[in-house]
Length: 458
Image (tube, rainbow, N blue to C red; front, side):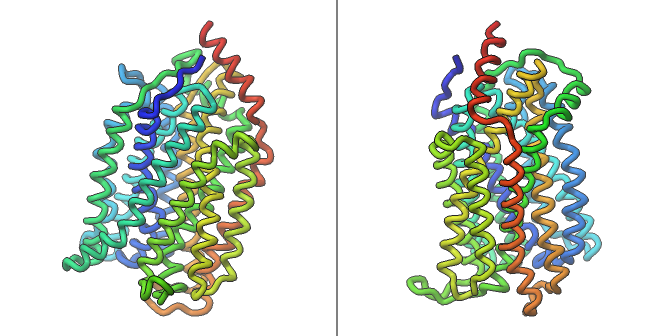
């Protein structure tokens, strides 16, 4: 019989993604804009940097999974990394949003170095954090509950960032700081909070699930993974889903600065584009949290697979509809954003719960378990999704003639509209379509869980 998890432990697990998501949303919403409009690097050079760094970083994820699988301490395999990496995570985040006065070439080199380090330290803490879910419990419903708490934490962290960031930036700018310094000071605040919550996750969680067989060879782990068709399907669907999310989030600042611009709204008066973009992202995250809360009841009725597919198709349709909205339809822009956010939010906890199911399926099929390696694939999909979702908008901007801090042409505005509507909508549709091939439905996984439990007791 699987041990039921106490609410405190679920909250503690959610703290980890509260910490992580603050930085993830800073990267998704601000980093591209920071590089082009604050550091004043060209869109093409930033796009190439994203591709180079994230391809390299994607290779680090399986390596981190292998390291975590072979880590054995009195506190577990995965939990200690939350303690060890918390402070480096915050420090390197601050350095990433710093702008030394070393000329254009020097700034680009500095961006390459700090962003590479940031992605590596992100891997070092998030692969163990993601893997932790699979060893806290072997109950599929408890895992979905854990995933929901994780994403409640994630969206709480994201909302805390998006709701406060425009005001923090304004505070430092009004105090006389430059744009570059304002970003650095803002990230210092989030770095301290993130380190604290990672340590809280370490303190409030526990590892319970033991593998049937220990000390697998790296070769056998990789061979098992290469034969796991369900892992490949989930990896592809996860990458496309994250491309969809990152595409939209990378586009928000450009969409509001150059297309929507400052607005005079009924009930709110004059509102700057910066505050509109912050409110847009905050409402998106609030809607995502509503979706996370709906994930368990909806997936209990429809099953995880069907829920994922339906939600992705709804998000695809709603994203594409945004293309035809004009700058004066601010309330309709926000309404579509909220509904889309609920749909997208339903999917996210399911992804992590399904990765845990795939880890059980692999152990059931082969007698060997490589939780860290398998969960590192989810981190790798995040990096690849972030790479594509971050680089593609930059190439679209460049190809449509975008110039930072200048009045945009009709052609460049067309590119900005496409990169927040049509393109992310198509990737969402592809993600849902790919999961039609996924075979690990809820009924089959109930059988796998029961048989594994019997073997472990034996």
